Length: 194
Image (cartoon, rainbow, N blue to C red):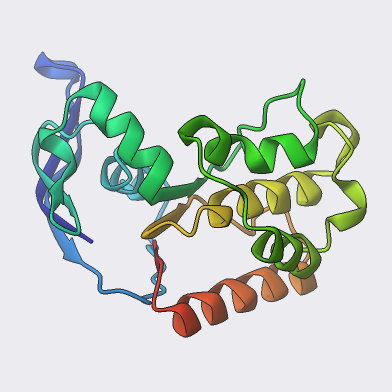
């Protein structure tokens, strides 16, 4: 996974803000990387552009041999569903679906079967097995975050992007999720984490 000379400008004229200014980074398989910096430094913008969720003003994003910036919207959507996991800062769980349905949704959208063993391992490791029948409104912030993490990991994506993935977890749960994610990354040879 790599980003090459990414530029992202918000707005135009005198009000233009250059959120990314020629950023190039590369990460190999099984890499677990934290992007750190002060508020407003472009961390989320870089993450969203690298994940194919936002379009850079210029530059390229490469996932394996695929240039995400050269894809049509329909193809990019399919690539994101099939090859990229994302944990949003605000979780983006659908309120009318249960935790179970939210976790399974991306695989169902692309018609892939849910791996029962992987599913059981994920929800067990994340401590949400007893909350699968609950809708997001009946889950704590930390539980919602763990549902979002399970959703991102279930498809065994090539890369997982997480925007403050442990921000709503207590310190013990945060360490457990980070440690579990790092072990999965290292032992499986995939995915790369940003």
